[in-house]
Image (cartoon, rainbow, N blue to C red; front, side):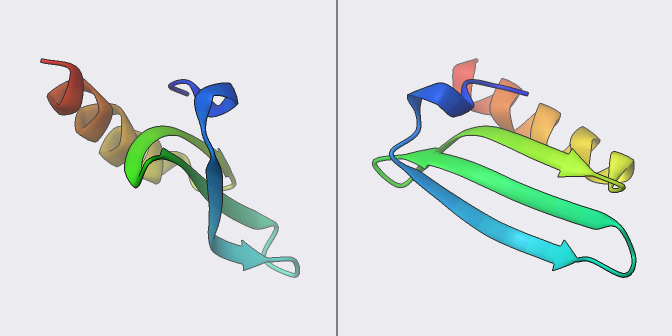
Length: 56
């Protein structure tokens, strides 16, 4: 979600191969611009609200 292609940095927040979970946040100049999650659906709400607050 967001604009991960606009990022200049990707940060792996969680990588749990056995648990089949992945969470990556994308930043441009230190500011969150996107996110990707696999097996972490609940975290999407956090990223969605954070990105909306930043654009409001």
